[in-house]
Image (cartoon, rainbow over all chains, first blue to last red; front, side, top):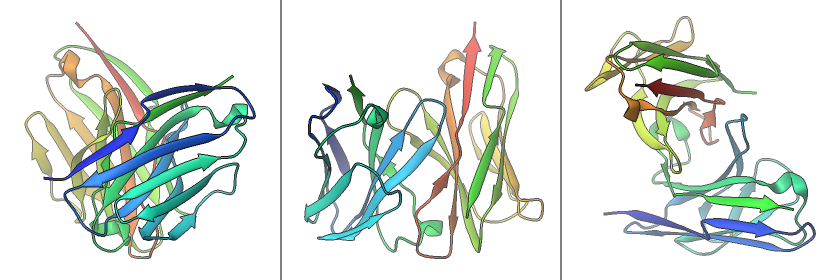
Length: 116
Length: 111
């Protein structure tokens, strides 16, 4: 069966510090991978998605970047965090085409980031 | 730009009540609408709806889609405290872009 792991679960970082959140998927090959951010009262905002190694699509220009160094690994990074980067970050995966109409996303447990 | 609007944003009910959550959408080349339940961490999948008028049911939860009026409802009957969660609605299109989510409805069920 497929599983998705996301870490760290909780992170408190000072403004200006770097960030690295990691997500890995097991039990499937060539998944589509996604990073969403959930701010209080604002629903899920898609940040990045990837259909393959080294392929990253950015949905919202901001202080973050994503990388996919291996088939089942997706990393969210920042060189210098801002206060506005605080939030709950969710990694998700799906199979098949990114054509979202047919795919059900499966989410990781999330990483809560607080920037002080 | 694709858009999903959920209402109400929050709701407090007593155990045993029946609730209806609403999701309206504007999307180019609609293909599907999905409902998720988010208790504390990962949203979990509830239903995927693609055809109008066909009810999807799982226990006390049911959902239906109206593609003409561009909305869906999620019904929960005989609510329990374990139903307390944020319920998320998302839509997918036939293009090459991922799901678009609404802001969610926070449901609180009190004993």
